[in-house]
Length: 115
Picture 1 (cartoon, rainbow, N blue to C red):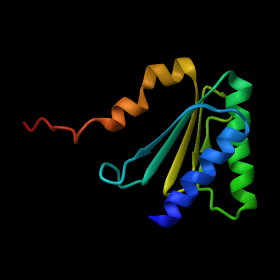
Picture 2 (cartoon, helix red, strand yellow; picture 1 turned 90 degrees about the horizontal axis):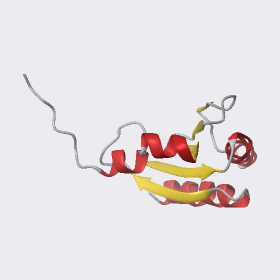
Picture 3 (spheres, rainbow, N blue to C red; picture 1 turned 135 degrees about the horizontal axis):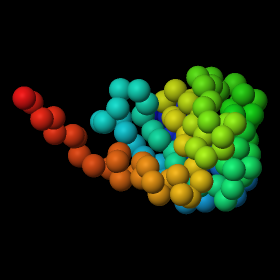
Picture 4 (cartoon, rainbow, N blue to C red; picture 1 turned 180 degrees about the vertical axis):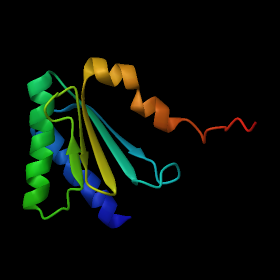
């Protein structure tokens, strides 16, 4: 837990360095087998989203944090930086409003329709 929290704090700090907005940290340990935390934030434009994600990427590499992948960098609507136990989502406002990740991940366990 301590290691993951330190990584979350590191990521939030790097997002704040480039003025990422509306930062949310979601603990998904009980809901996901893929990651422990999601960090979601907004950027003002395609370039801003790309810059925030790139800053997280560069700073993580310099801190010798393993980066499992980065997706969406070219488009700049929604860039995902996968750091294993922490997955970062940097999104433009309209994309964030559309997908509503915080709402999706804050809901209880999904009911499956057996049938």
